[in-house]
Length: 244
Image (cartoon, rainbow, N blue to C red; front, side, top):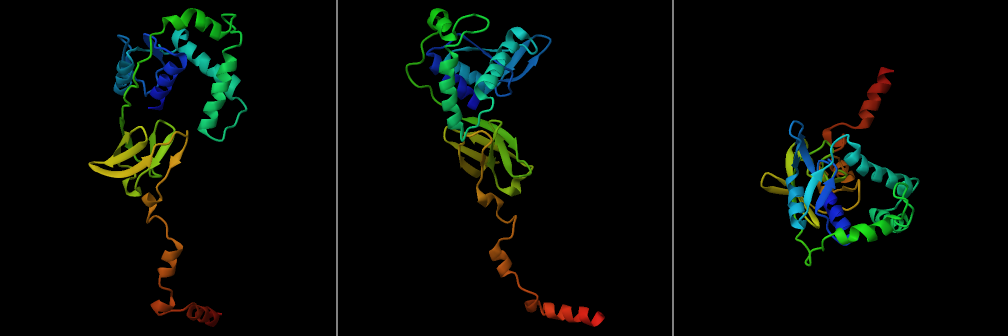
């Protein structure tokens, strides 16, 4: 889901749509490929996204520098020049930093083209983009099947985790990812509802999902002492002293 939202944000940033969308082979985009025929099986949700935006999806050829290498080189550049030795308090702070960094990076002389990327874009590429939709496109929900981990979390968007009742550990559940909510179902029963997180590696927890796993102080106070069971610690001390 986050990947498709990022692509849509890219369309908005550049102010237009390409005709073909070349992507990596991430599971959120590509389910697999037939090596004999070269046929790519795209994720149905990704295909629906491409239909909504009227773009033709393509996938990088694995281990081929002309496609895969181009995408990896861009990722490497951002990691080394924008993110190295940086720390951020939140995902929002990271996004703001990258927005400011992109403005500077667009003005730098590119090592291959020997000109600033923004100059090349304005001269050769902007006119090739098609217009953005006049109306905002509907947001699609995403339905995922997940197995509950031993810590009673399910994984969504690779790096976000949501709790479910601990009784469902090792069971399979369906996760419905909406614009603002994440709802989790076990069969027809909705077992958890969470506000959708935008923070990477976030753990969204409902403490009620862990009720009964640990004894609280109130539980200990309610537990009858030895005296109520007909014994006292002094009785055991006397036995020990007598044995000595």
